[in-house]
Image 1 (cartoon, helix red, strand yellow):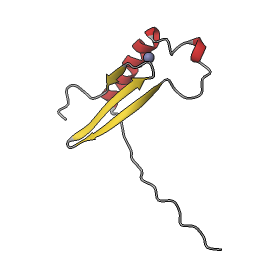
Image 2 (cartoon, rainbow, N blue to C red):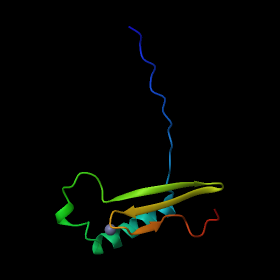
Image 3 (tube, rainbow, N blue to C red):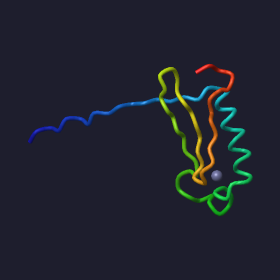
Amino acid sequence: MEMSEPKKTLTLTFTLDEVEMGIRNKWLEEHSKKCALYGPATAGWFGSPYHYVFTPWGCGTGKEIKCNCGESQSLNDPNEEL
Ligand SMILES: [Zn+2]
């Protein structure tokens, strides 16, 4: 019996720097107060009500956090040229 080849993988790493983390934390704090998807009713849910969108551009990466309710926030440092 032949050993099967290990599955090929592609590893993509996206990072948030300190400023972007700050934007994320601030948005999450604000958003969790007004969003219906947050709160005791969903506290035990598996997974998260929000997700990240990383869009590779020619000269940088678009970073965004999106909530399942439809709201989103750009995480890119507004002071940084992309
Ligand atoms: Zn929401």
